[in-house]
Amino acid sequence: MKAKVQQKLELQNGMIASDDADFAHFLQQLKQSSNGNLGMLDYIEYQKFPIEWKNVNDTSWLVNYTGDWSVVRYLADDAATVTESNVAGNTASFTFDGFAVGVFMQKGSFDGIVDIYLDGTKVATVDTYNATRLEHQLVYQNNSIGSGSHTVEVHVTGTKNASSSGYLGILDSFEYK
Image (cartoon, rainbow, N blue to C red):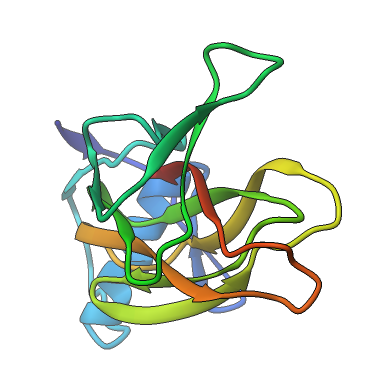
């Protein structure tokens, strides 16, 4: 949806400020692309991305898996699942339109090391080992990837922390906005 927006704008420490976080983000990108010269603007039309995080569960048809992965249900909640693999090279990927992304995984005593890729570039290596199980842990987040279509991937590495008893990569969900 395109929105016609009239806003009071302020400069705070050289930054454009607005009560609308999406609009402020849009203006910062506009300022960067115009080398800081916004000129005299009378009117701006922009496409507003969702301001709230959207959750995509591990079992969503939007998540693509390569290799062998298993869906596991939590004992305490029949509706809650995670999807796990311990095979090096297996991947879980999610493509979305937005400007921010988060990856949530389970951490535990059988969990290994995963690599996170964004748009084909490795952006993080994450050790998901923890002595006790921790559910729905934010292991990667990027809030400034630029508006557009992006793909985030979780790669099982087949490596682990010396304290871990296994090599599992356990995906819980992706979030984006």
